[in-house]
Length: 370
Image 1 (cartoon, rainbow, N blue to C red):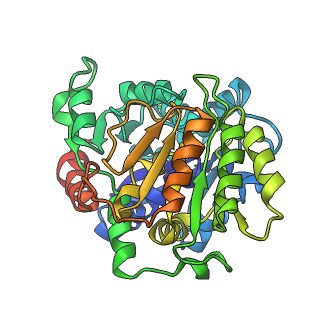
Image 2 (image 1 turned 30 degrees about the vertical axis):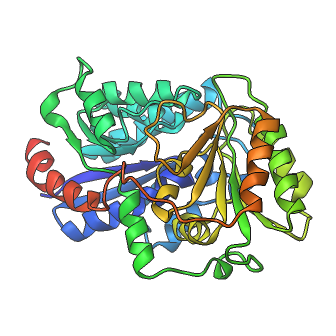
Image 3 (image 1 turned 180 degrees about the vertical axis):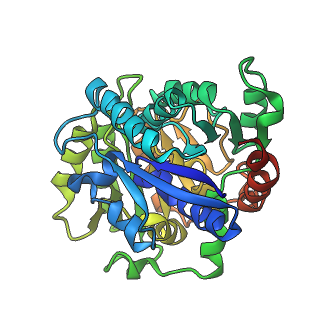
């Protein structure tokens, strides 16, 4: 009888990275797969991205409803994920659950798995992000997990230093987001097919999330960044934040600018759409982990603003700046005044063979143990 591996996704960001792995595991043929969908996937305000899962051909998934449309997530929503997912897991009883990263929802899922005695595979442990609560969630997930797939060598070494983790269950795989990027590059899609009206090489991609561990005026800085880009006759592509506490201030800035003819707003782009935007944009500005992990593989300049990603290993193409609006806008103007130059990628997060490594680990190391 086949073992079942579950995949929990609470946000468009982790699903965009995870979906190729789910397809790969299905093709492997030694596991049954089951997807557990929760978080902002189920919110209309954030694009109801459960539809993307359906469009990708995954009809077999369980819905774990937790959030209301207008409420920031808190302990009630956290508890609801644990309670609801635990009941589902008791009925469906997957043999192992795959979790990515550091989201609030993933931490709740890890606790539900722990109480239901379901082993956890965790991808993305060992990372540091000192400016976000995600740092806390990530390390707690690592403590609860049995198997660990590290996305960088630094993260791998950090996981090995944790006394509660069994060294033989820690593996450096790289990020399988890079596999997706390499696949996209082999058959790229023009961004204009995703966002009508965007001009290749004439727009900046701007993605900001709220900062949960310090008081930083990211909404004001985002407003100034948009104003500055537009003043140079360039376009702006804005993507929605996650629903972390404080997200409404960022949405207010988006609402302010969305009627401008040179501002394009998308609740979500999907992985392919996001890669198309990275490929054809002038530069990337914000505080998203995608600017640290994925963007350098497109050889573009990245402005990483504030402390949200502090502690991550960063590529030479990433410019990290404090939340000083004058400093940021002055440097942005300098870059808008000069011709863009292609940057060199340091390949910190692997070479795009993570899926091959994970496939082998699942069949040869993990399957015999569950």
